[in-house]
Image (cartoon, rainbow, N blue to C red):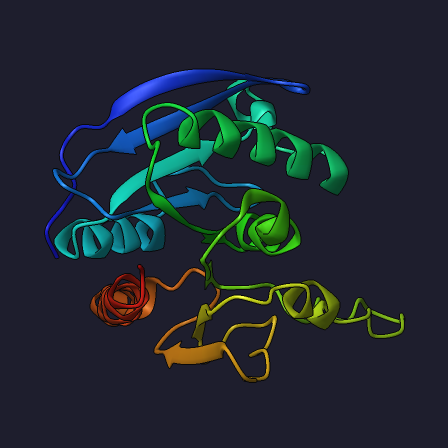
Length: 213
């Protein structure tokens, strides 16, 4: 795995506070991959790093986005609506500036993947990358099984890749037309086989790029 170089860091105002984007520019890029982090983690998560490295090899510029609650030093995530509004503001800012003219592939890990799915239409994404999508929340002791998050995935109408650990406690979402599922060794962290994560992401991105006008 080729590790990304030191990124350019931008602070971006959103309706819910300051967000931060870590930009990895690629010369003559045709697409941009914008990735969000998990609920309790940050942009240094190893699967996000693996996806970033794979995208750079494919000639795709990458922005790793820290939500305002993380920039403010809080670990507990903001409500979904706030996450979506802040994310959309960041993407709009990037596509209007540093990533202008590039086709957008949106994505993230876990909670960040959910945000990317919910906002795919609003951001104009041509593809969505989900790392460790939290499909079926585990049942709590003595309680009923929570509803799965299939509805969020079904909002997406563009090609989607989901890379899921085969032993992820959130389960594995179903494949469908335009939705590709790749399972790798490991759990929700996807640390069990980062090379496989990178290979899956790179191969899929290559196909997305090849279809761009």
